[in-house]
Length: 327
Image (cartoon, rainbow, N blue to C red; front, side):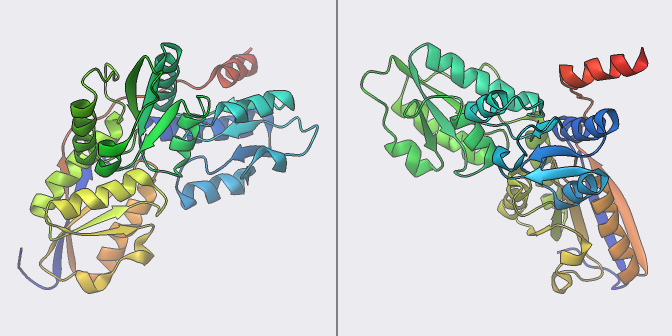
């Protein structure tokens, strides 16, 4: 435990934190569609898992719907699919209804979809390591016919999952936002049971998930309390809390500064702060300001693990729109 003056607190900011390239691209897609085509544009599901982001886009003219049947018949407005990806049936429904749809699926999630399709085409049964009910998992499972893919959530699942007798082999893909350590254990069990298990040439857990978990692990070694800014339904944010707890820190998931449990914070402490990949930096700044309002001296330091310089292009529909607007 770090001790010191009760009117001083040290905030240690994880770097990297917050928005990843896939989230930045998805938000930019909605904003570019609004700028190009005007309001409203429809968005199926939350574009990313963050209420602040969703409300900001709603104020600009985005209409969020749960399913495509909420989009009026004959609608000529853009319909945008979220960053988490969608089942093939959703794309087919949009085409059947002649909806102008724009897919904001993260390119790294698309990679997982393509891997699953490739293995299925080769006759392999696909195992998806992920969390049931998460939109990314629903979208990935929806790339293949019923029965062609099995979900593995836990180590126990890995020990008991079976594959069809007529399968020509077995392969795995994973959700992009999983715990790196938990997934490693699950894959080890699967590889022991299925020695010929095929996998991706490069792991499916995305760079942003891995980097943020490593940064939080470093935070936990120095901090008394770790605050993770993120939404309760954000998988990658919840994994960050778990990482901090696993490495000995008290950890809280907070959507905004209003959610901080101040009973766990005392002067003289070191408080680590990170943010999930869908949490905007403005919310982190709000947390810092909340500490400044409570403590006479707030020391802010950044713990830099590595820099990120990855970016993704907008989809062709909007790149073409930009060219048209410039001509």
